[in-house]
Amino acid sequence: MRPPPCDVWWARTDWLRPEHLTVLGAAESERLRRYRYPADRDRSALGAVLLRAVAARALGSAPGAVAVDRSCPSCPGSHGRPVLPGTGLYVSTSHSGAFVVVAATRAGPVGVDVEEEPSRLGTDLRVGALGPREAAGTTDAAGFVRCWARKEALLKAVGMGITVPLAEVDLGPPGEPPRLRRFPGARPDQVYVTDLPAAEGYAGAVCVLAPGPVPVRHHDAGPLLHSGLFGEPSVTGGPVLSGGRVR
Ligand SMILES: CC(C)(COP(=O)(O)OP(=O)(O)OC[C@H]1O[C@@H](n2cnc3c(N)ncnc32)[C@H](O)[C@@H]1OP(=O)(O)O)[C@@H](O)C(=O)NCCC(=O)NCCS
Image (cartoon, rainbow, N blue to C red; front, side, top):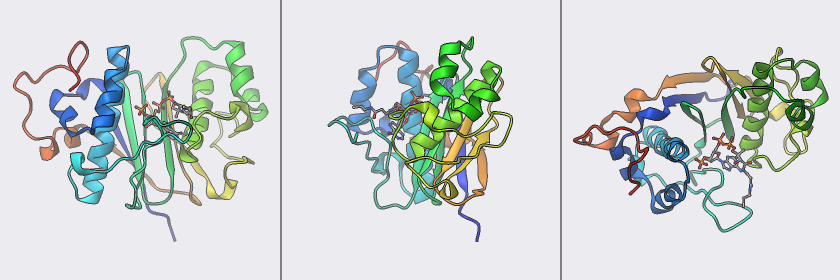
């Protein structure tokens, strides 16, 4: 039997509007206030908003009513992997450059990653981050960032984040479909990783802890972000938050 699909929702950072912020919880708003750079804050804000919108759509709820647990396993902070307790829906979010992405599925724990290509590929980056099979097939920044996105998607699916040496997670050369041979945090036959069709200059990957292949469906998040889920648009139609306020 095929596993349930994984839905991947794509947004651009500058789609964030002031009315979107009204659905965030107190801990999410508090975290946003602590960002130093407005662009980073906007990306994170849109990730949190889109995650709530996607969950609300799947659960038949309202974005502000979705319970999102972001507990960190290592400290009392609220910056860990997003979990929707008791729903059976698994979610993950990532943001980089101009893009924000959210993945949601009932197939199993999920991790998604989108990464902007580094402007140059230093040898130090390659040595520290790539496993032997990956390094052998990586000759440029595009290949490197593809390997990186695959690893990060996997580490987010298992909930570890980058807490293990990245070179230990070897998913194979960037020119071949990702394949995990061994990893202490998950059984390779229970791990499905695939590349996402990211824009020029970006790479993306999604990982679901389920026997693959998991069907991946892509969605433009624009209509969802401008739907009735967020009430009336603001009078100014306001730009993104850069320079603006966080409630
Ligand atoms: C998760 C992690 C890989 C994200 O890296 P990144 O490339 O900077 O960011 P991305 O945009 O791809 O993903 C960010 C999202 O990952 C999610 N996330 C955070 N921790 C996560 C974890 N352990 N597992 C899965 N997802 C996680 C959050 O939703 C986060 O979004 P937010 O910061 O806007 O809330 C990185 O932050 C990490 O390794 N964190 C764990 C480190 C840790 O445990 N530190 C202890 C702190 S006390």
